[in-house]
Each structure stands twice: as C-alpha cells, then as structure tokens.
Length: 374
Image (cartoon, rainbow, N blue to C red):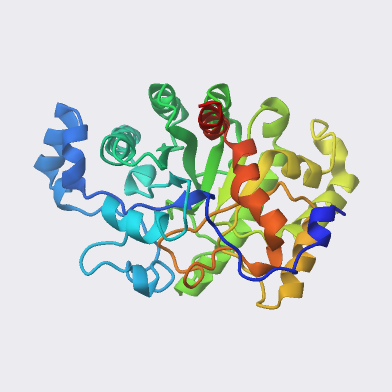
C-alpha cells in the first residue's frame, strides 16, 4: 500500500490555495448570446424557427434544486455562474484557485440533428474562448462535441487544437452506445493526437433509460443510476480495447464519484480472469488499466462522513494518482470552502490539487513550465 495513503486522516481542514480545479461549470449561454458565433445559415435558421428564444441549458433536475446549485451560490435571476464576475467571486477567489477547467454543459451536445449539434457546439466553444478565456487568465476550456457524429466531432477538435487554452475534449456519459465502441474511436484518436484528455461528464441525451430495467419515476432514481452508467462505460472502454488501441489516451470521469471503484475493481478483475480468452487484447487486470489511463474528479465525494470510511476506500483503490481536485461549482457537494475532505491529509491533498492535474493535462503542465522558467 502506498505510504501516502497510510498517512490519511491525520489532518484538519485543508487549504485549496494554488489548486487546479478540474470541473467548474459556467452557466450555459442563452441561445441569443450564441447567435453572433453562428454562421449566417444557422443564425437565420434559429431565428426563423424560434430556437433563439429557447434556453438550451442542460440539467436533469430543476435549475434551482439544491443538488444543482448551492443556496449561497444562487443567482437572484438567471443561472448560477452566468457572469464572469460571479465565477470569480464565488469559485476562483475564495478557493485561491490557480487554474480552473470550464465544463460548459449545453444542449448542443444532445441534439438529434448532427449538423445542428455540431454548429451549436462550435458556437459554445467560440463563446467560451472569446467571452471567458480571453478575459480571465485563470480559466481553461473544454472542447464540447456531440459524440453521435465522430466525423463532425473530430473536425471541431482539430479546429480548436491550436488554442492551448482548451485542455480537454468533453462528452457525456450517457450516449447512444457504450463508449468503448469503435464508432467513438476517431474522437479518442483526435484527442490523443492533440494531447487532450477526454472528459466523460455525468449527463446524457436521455434517448435511452438510465437504468437497465427502464425509466424511473423520480429524480433520486435517475441520479443514483449515474453510478452504474459510469461503471458500464468504464468497463466498455477497457473491454473493447480503447486503451490498447490508443495507449497514449487519458480519460477523465467527471462527477462520477469514485467510492464505487473498489468493488468495481474486484468484480472486473475476478471476471476477467475467468473469461479473458474472449478479449485477448486486455493483457492485464482491468484495475491496472484504469489506474494508468483514467482519472476521477474529486467532487462529489460520495462517502460516509466518518473519516475512517473514506480512508479505507482510498486504501482499497490503492492509487494516489487517480483523483483530480474539483469544486464542481456551482453544484452543492460541500459547504463553505470544504472542498477537500480532511481525511486526505496535506500530502495527498497537494497531489490531488496540483501534481495529478499536471500529469493528466499536458497543456496545463506546459503553462506551469513557462511560469517556472520566467
């Protein structure tokens, strides 16, 4: 067991100053805000159809529900995080954040029309670059794409690849098929080619039920089911051979939780040993592949309040490289500035806040290198 994990649970409240926040959510832009970033055809189409009057903010629960936005981060009107000033005052300055990765969750990612989805994703990315990244040097961006059309997604990745402020590609966890399928491989290849991790974020198109037995009745069912969706996608990536085919690929699971990993590792490794002849390209335990290629954002920390419980979970995971610091702003995952559970201890907390993100995001690591050389 790693010595860093042995020392857990011995510290009091931990500082987040200087950390790299790997999951921060600016509010989705209003469709009228995106019109200047669309070409003439789509601008005219949206106005003609009345799409410009629609909100395409993506959420699976009421916008002001506690799980969507913390009470002290709610906006008097509109959505939390809808202005740069608000994000600075609520999410950057209080935590002493050095850099934060913006994950804009927008309905463009789930449009039924491939072309409309691609146009809107491009507009959101351009909006993020011009109105946020140009203005706030602490922010970095995720290239949002609609995974249903790999060719159009790759084109958007290549279009943004020269802007080093975009540090990853963002897709949703619940897509049309398991994410290990070959239809998605061109997206992963384009991301790896441009040194961009692929972030798989909670959410989806809802074209398929979030449970294996059909549609649930209540939000709590759909929310809890996200855990099983992430487990399925993780196993799909491993079993289908994505990491064998693209060994340089890094994947980040955002808002997936991580306390389910010990049981997932045990069952995946045990079953693989019994049927591994079926997937000869999986040449080592699934848990070892995951530990090398996949990272998990810290929030939400879905663990009991007892310090010992989280300590035991991290010991069972047995990989201090696997977690990335996140606040998940503005979602209600913790109170005040307590984004880092005290059980982590200062040494592991620093690794999660700085070292692990630098090892995961080559473009951010390059920025840090430039700062050090000055």
